[in-house]
Length: 253
Image (cartoon, rainbow, N blue to C red; front, top):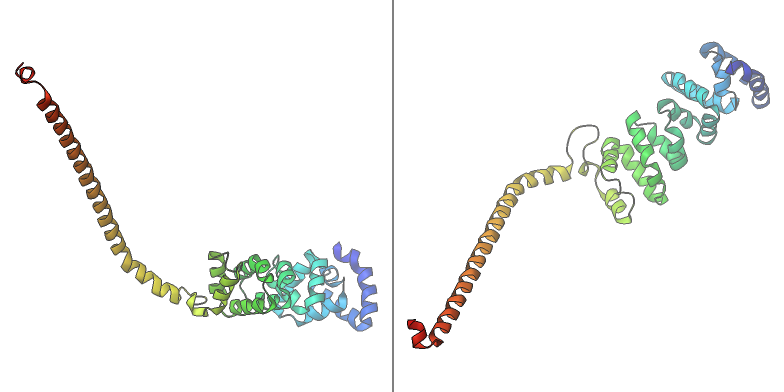
C-alpha cells in the first residue's frame, strides 16, 4: 500500500532529479527488493539510490527496513552525511539520529565500526561528548574508535568523566591500555597495580583497625577505673576529715 501510494510522486522526482537513468535504477531495485523501495527511497531518489548502491550487500536489506519505517529521518541523514547515514541506520536502527545530531559525520564514522551494544553506549554519551571543545571531541572519538569496549565501559562506570575539564584531560592523557584492553577480559594498568595492592594492604588495614579498637577500649576501661578510684579516695578523705573533727565523746557514743 505504502509503495503504490508513493509511486506517482517518486516517478516525478526521479524524472526531475535524474531522468530516465535514475528511474530505471529505481525500477530495477523495485524488482529486486519489492515495492517498498518506492517509499523507502522515493523522498529524494537521487541521493537515496546513490547511497543505497554503495552499501555492502548484507546491509541493503536492513537499510531498506530502516528507510521504509522512517523515510523522512533516513532521507535527512543521507542528505547530510551520505552513505554513512544510511549505513548506521542499517547497522544500528534507533541510534542513528542521536549520534548524527550530537556528533556529526565523525560520530557516524565511529558508530559504524561498533557493535550494536557499543553504539547504544556511544549514543548514550553523545550529548556529553558534543559539549566538549572541537579538539577534545575529536580526541575522545579517536580513543573510542581505537578501544571501544574499554573506553565506553569506563564512561559507563564513571559517568562524570566528561563533565569537568580536569577529568577530560585525565581521560585523554591516559593510554588505552591503562583503562583495560579492548574486547577482552584483561585488566588495564590501573587494575593490575591497584588490585594486588588492595589485596596486600587489606589484611594490614584490618589488623591495624582491630589494634586501634583494642587500644581505645583499653584506654576507656583504664580511664573509667582511674576516675572511679579517685572518686572513692575523695569520699574516704571527706569521711576521715569529718570524723576527726567530731568531739571525742561523740566518737565514743
